Amino acid sequence: MRTKHTFSFSQALRAIVLSTLLSLTVLSLTANAASAADNDTKHEGTMSPDQMHVLLERLDPEVERDGGRWQATINDVPIIIVTDQAHNRMRILVAIRKADNLTPDDLRRLMQANFDSALDVRYALAQNILWSTFIHPLSALHDRQFLTAIGQTINLAQTYGSSYSSGLLLFGGGDSGAIQQRELIDKLLQQGQPT
Image 1 (cartoon, rainbow, N blue to C red):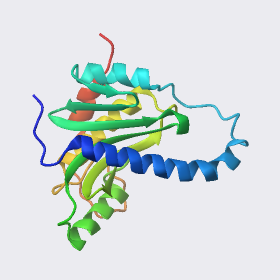
Image 2 (cartoon, one colour; image 1 turned 120 degrees about the vertical axis):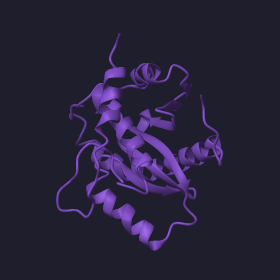
Image 3 (cartoon, one colour; image 1 turned 45 degrees about the vertical axis):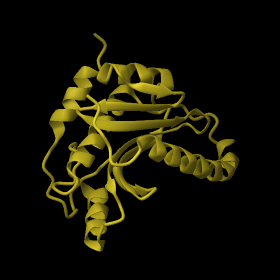
């Protein structure tokens, strides 16, 4: 069952896509010069939008796809996934809350978590929304990494206000005493396997 939201995911998605495309355009201008030297670099993974869709259908048979964008509900959490094949980038996004009432102490705690307990996922602010987000090169992604990233992104959103943890590990030397949320990641890895 889909949950109701206090803000429009389609509006937020549209804003994120537009800001992502603007950022990618600026990045591509600076990256074009460097890309000639990197043409022989081999990709680590084999991810494509079609492979991503197959994996998402295993997690949510009702996943909605619009080109390189998906909306799904996994573990009762709405997620958005955006890809840009031309620039070899992808993001997993989970909206957490409106950002207008975040205090300086809240922002400090988010930055501490980004250092030691968020790991591959990050807290981010965009369009006056606090997000849990995973950002990665698209084609370098493996199936297992993608499924783990979904679990981490959901865990980070769900532990906002408590352990602020992606559930994978805790990087030593930081300020967070995170509680592990490994169960969801293991469940998604199992669910993502072909039947």
